[in-house]
Length: 352
Image (cartoon, rainbow, N blue to C red; front, side):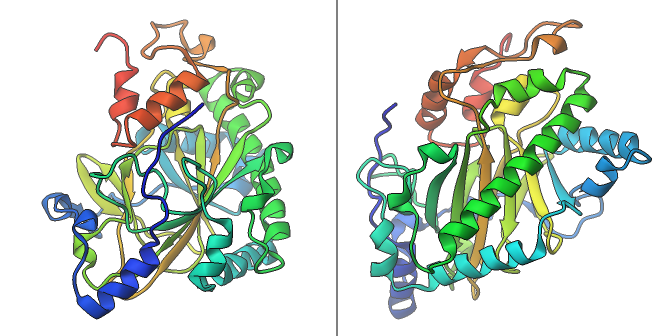
């Protein structure tokens, strides 16, 4: 599967450093739509649902917490997962390692730079044309699972502990995602294996994001509005700088992450599988004027070649609301839509 990308060798950190001298944001980064979009700040009712993994696993509370999980997936498409059982030392180590990587000189980070038309590696991702507005972010994108499909040439060797830490973190998230998928299946009333079967092998990738500060933060966007073309995403805040915004009721609102929690969101694939019951929600990242922001987004996806469509068990009471297509066609279409909001997902709906 081939996707054409351009302009991947420009570092946003270098652009940010230059702005400190010139005071001018390059035109390709200026996003006029930011000021036009209303943003809700601190309004009642705009707090993400919180799901407690320990209650999901406790027979005394599992039914109640599973119902909360289903409601969060159906009405929000996002939730914060607490008491998830991750080793605290591992979380601290991966945060330290990622922070150290992004603090390296640019030439050292470029040792794992994205090759032409590549996806994995460090650099500026998902640039489709010379005219496209650019996001204010440098990324390290890695395929992490299955292990045999890793391209270690793109895995940094500095700091020396990073590869091992990423491997452990990746495995822990596989186990956590399997648990969540099972509780989702229970909530949906479908066979657990029917849901997990779509994610056979649990393909996983990571997008590790560095958002440099920008003194003119109201002119730039860290990530353009988009949905995730995967099954489910786990977001970990590496530092305490916020920036995630979610679109609800046609307005943007800022997410305040609970320390140590994962922010989990439903992807396009899971919306299709559930025939629209669970929602894949548009989100974006904004920039802090004085502080850098670092996050790790881990994606649980499907194997290339598998079929993506509404689960048959959910069609007993009605018709399919989405097309069924193979994952290669789905992925090509997702990238062809240039990550523009929900445009591609909406195009897959039937009977519009």
